[in-house]
Length: 166
Ligand code: RTP
Ligand code: MG
Image 1 (cartoon, rainbow, N blue to C red):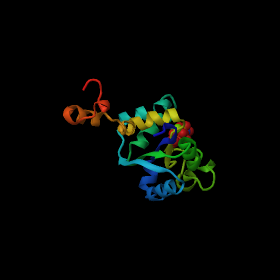
Image 2: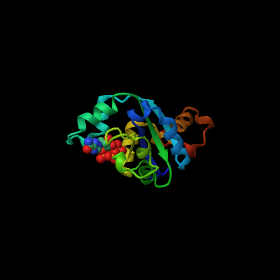
Image 3: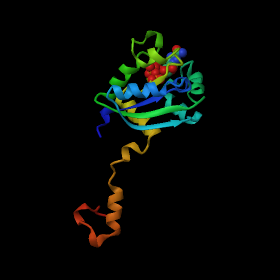
Image 4: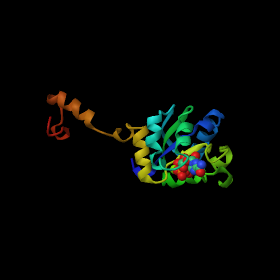
């Protein structure tokens, strides 16, 4: 999996509560994103403070944490060429009033705070956010389990496929 092709996305509490998540997920698929992970969760305050840590000095930090932990959200790992830029283009500007026509925030956001969705702002941030919410994502192709099986059955194993420790 190429990491530049991944981004982290969230349908925020306002859009989930307004029953817009189905429409947003449909837009995601119609715009060519592969949904690699999807989960509906209620985020803890501790996790929200880490997730929004970059904004901790901003005056709206407390509001942001209270909002994102207030009700269920849908978190996703999205896969597409230029995933970060492509997803940010589809969601539109932070303020729904300034977002381009047809973008998710223009369609479903109602204010700067209640702006329907989140998108990572760079590939580096995407990796951090994906690792925070989907820690299994990057270990998915880890071959260690196969190696473990191999170690347990040395008679039937192809030595070349075993770790040196076997
Ligand atoms: P996000 O992280 O949620 O995808 O949004 P963004 O990159 O477009 O905007 P960012 O600057 O990262 O801000 C994070 C969230 O903080 C809220 N915000 N409130 N009251 C304000 O002036 C203000 N500015 C930003 C927004 O909900 C924004 O999504
Ligand atoms: Mg941001």
